[in-house]
Amino acid sequence: MAEQTGATSAGGTTGDQPKLVPLFLIYTFGRLAIAAVLIALLWWLGLPGTPGFLFGVLLAMPVSFFALAPVRTRLTAALAARAERKEALRAELRGTETDDGRG
Image 1 (tube, rainbow, N blue to C red):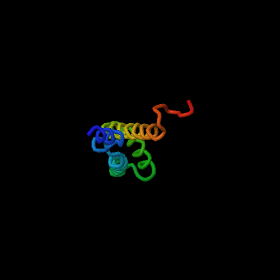
Image 2 (cartoon, helix red, strand yellow):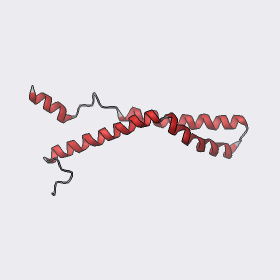
Image 3 (cartoon, helix red, strand yellow):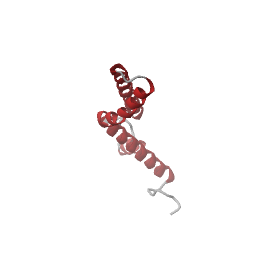
Image 4 (cartoon, rainbow, N blue to C red):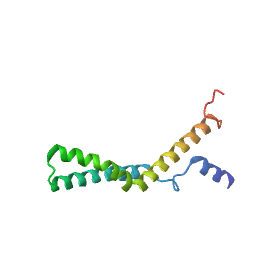
């Protein structure tokens, strides 16, 4: 049993880890949707063409920053967990716990 537990933790099962790709897609499409809605709203309000497009893109930045903050936080945590798993796997394959094996 101890070997199975050690193999599971060393293998880094992803059952409790957040999935990276779905979070990335949600964040990306959320930003695009916010920009599209703001651009359409500005065009509907009478700011035509390129100025409406550019102003909509400009307004989408702070709106996305605040509206998508929870998704961005989870995405950052997933990226950090992935980096930790990769570093642990590298250290395990190298046979040491240090970052650089030349020590």
